[in-house]
Amino acid sequence: MAGKPILHYFDGRARMESIRWLLAAAGVEFEEKFMKTRDDLEKLRKDGSLMFQQVPMVEIDGMKLVQTRAIVNYIAAKYNLYGKDIKERALIDMYSEGMTDLNEMVLLYPYLPSSDKDGRLTQIKEKSRNRYFPAFEKVLTSHGQDYLVGNRLSKADVHLTELLYHTEELDSTVLANFPLLKALRTRVSNLPTVKKFLQPGSQRKPFDDRKCVEIARKLFS
Image 1 (cartoon, helix red, strand yellow):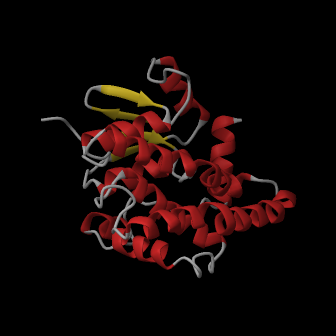
Image 2: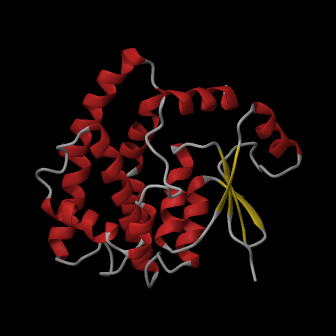
């Protein structure tokens, strides 16, 4: 029997959080090994664990996978969160990739200089309200189903739910005009596996605070 996946990163959201969300949604227990110093990162590099000298890295099924998209795609395929055929997979990929621009802005927001944060927050609000969230609201309106693709949970729904939560942390009224997105977030949040992940004390990470940012800078600068 294969052991639990092991996630190698620092104790923060950044590029590992989408992996945590997807594993949690799939009901997969996982372990985490947090890097706390530059030496921890260098050890992984020197022992050949990091193909491109970068984290996140996930040990799963005898592999040491790097590159976030490769990792989430493997998890989605393994745990039946990737559609029933190639057409559904194409839509799931299209929707997931479509979130990337906004997700990057939200992900990197805590790491910006203070002087840049107001401008970035304005961008996040504008793009979420006028470009990305209307597009996903339209998808849900077009087919009237509970989930984005094939009326079943996929990685796209999990990624979008995560993004909705993270964007709301920066703009609490961002979903006011998107009732179907609010309903999707509620629906996914009420799935037993996700509900457990959203409870206090889970492996879900809080907003990356100043301490987390400092750790990341020491590791990667």
